[in-house]
Amino acid sequence: MPPEATPQQPEDPCLSELSTIDPDLIPILREPDAASKVIDALVNKYTPAQVQNAPGNRAWELAGLFLLNRSRSYEALAVFSRLYEHMLDAQKKAGRVHKGMVLLWISECFFRLNFPVHAKRHLMLTLSEDAISSGGRVSPTETGVYFRLVWRHGLADEQLQRYAHELYQLSKGNPEEALFPEALVRHLDDKWVTELPSQLEAFSYRINTRYAQHLLTQIDNDPSGKKLELLASYLMSCIPGCRVSVRRRSPSTDYDLVCSVDGIEVDFRSEFGRYFVCECKDLDKPADFTAMAKFCRVLDSTKSRFGILFSTRGISGAENLRDAAREQMKIFQDRGIVIVILDRNDLSTVAGGANLIALLRERYEAIRLDLQT
Image (cartoon, rainbow, N blue to C red):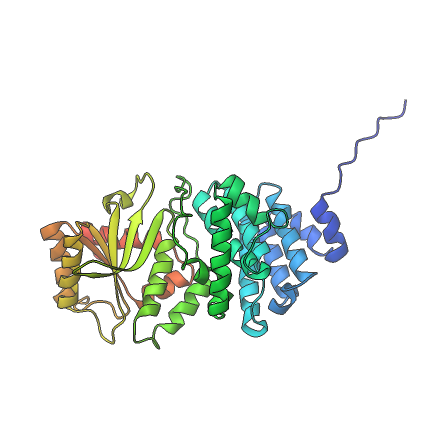
């Protein structure tokens, strides 16, 4: 008797389509270290201008989907994140590029990883892109963002369409900001922020480095200090579970940033308390004793145990533990309040992709335990 024929596995649909668009990618995707190699191949083959349209856009998307469909979510995330950066780079010459597709797949990667906060934030960025392209109203049948936000994350149709309209109007009034969906979404209220970070997500810190670096370059030419506040608020809002309000006022005090932490914390953030305040000082010299003492008074009045001073020039006395640096230590010793300092070098490091959560933990422990840094 002839041997039974071995059933043939159906061809993967992503590879099948890639075979007609860019077959050179197929053997790379079959390798164990496919992500890094395929990213290098895609970056070298398709310039930022070429990823605006097919085949570059579609080839990149299919490569990411191939990995995502095999539960290689971290690798797929790396592929899609690099495509997003490539599209942002394309905008420098071509003007605004629609980035809804890649943001949607980045959100899907986070959803597969059980990172609900990151997943929803990137869906809101997708909504911004789709709202601009559709004139302010998002179709429930023609977009992937609608059913994910409404069915998966519980956003009401009325709320989604209101956000879409607001985002479209913001893009018309702020064409430069419309290049970055992160810049538009920050204008919305935070009622859409309903997810709590998972335990896996708690230390995952992801930002759009292109947007952060864009804000960083504007700090020096902004005497009002608003750009520093924007950068600080963006970096803080990317911490899972951290809500940020900008320029809040009480009868006696102006708060640059008010942060609140949502979620069940079992790490060093549990000692922050629910609320803490951030102060932004874009000065031509280090923040001095007076600035430190005033900030301490603000934290004292709000019963906060933790605060962040964003000071582009740092604080005075850092070299020899005098002046403001000495006061920083005394504030903790006398009142149990930890004030962390983030200067321009720190902002540049985080804008380049460093983990802000890890940096805050390091600075917090240095004050709390009186460690040498």
